[in-house]
Length: 422
Image 1 (cartoon, rainbow, N blue to C red):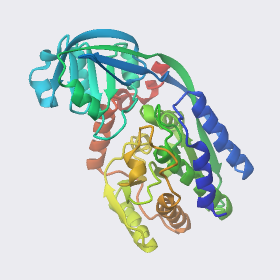
Image 2 (cartoon, rainbow, N blue to C red):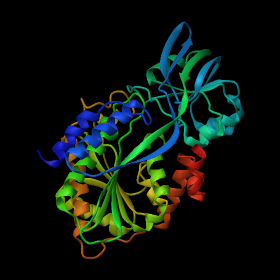
Image 3 (cartoon, helix red, strand yellow):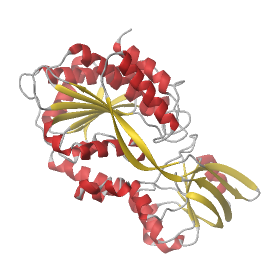
Image 4 (spheres, one colour):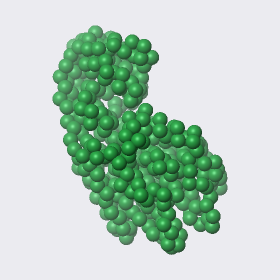
């Protein structure tokens, strides 16, 4: 059995719900570490605390009908009723925000940080979101900053088809339940010491947690399987450079494991040459993506190595919302690899993201390029790229943390980020 075949065996074993801080995630950790032990790969666990939640349910009643959905995790116990108001766009919200006051608002736009804050200030009774057509509803969480502030909007998630039915109602009643709780999660870390006694290191990572209700086969059991395969390769390869491989927890709740790791190891950040992050893989038919946060040399290195392998990758210079991002806040370049466009990736964050739809063929391209990159960088006599991030990408990074994660604190005062959540 070759490395990626062993990785696929791991994927089959961890394809069940792995919500951070739950027994499911703990079980996945035990399976991953069992595989590491069986192959003599030393590891250690890095625990951290966060505000998690118990998986919940929501029920909406209107016009003698009842539909079910999921609340945003941690909203507590909710029982309410009120007038339904449909908002087609966030432009309507921003031009006349007070119109949502005391309404139950059905929205047809992203509930990003800006829109959430606008809604919160204008006090709707609840907010209802819906998934794309023919897709099961999500069961997301609030950002850690919202838990800290202590005022959570009741947010309910339903299907597109149920939203169509609901849109004709004038009034709706809602019951929902999902309790928040302080939980402990753990990153799994493997350090492979290089032959050349260098201080610097290369990091490879993938998150192993999933969202609530989802088996997370593509997101990100596939990435975890590839990371494990790379660990097997590096153990036998005996590289010149130091490598750190990290199975992160808490990614689905806002990159919490990787943020914690960069804070805890911030004195070592100058030693990190590159981060290769793997997030979403398993599509038998799909397209490969490589998102580069680095200079032109790193961009061309990724493109050249993909061409050398004869694998088609769409290589872009931009952010990718995953565990490479916290390292970029310290000007550490990163490459995020993913595979999209097929059925598994279409089902991410839903109960259908299962091993039934993932395949070993959907892992191979990402594995081959990740392996090729680390081999080429390790064997090079001189550096193949500069350890830097261009200014235009730094603006994207700052905007990402502030506008998408709501984490001004991480950018401006990294030391206090996790202290506040304990």
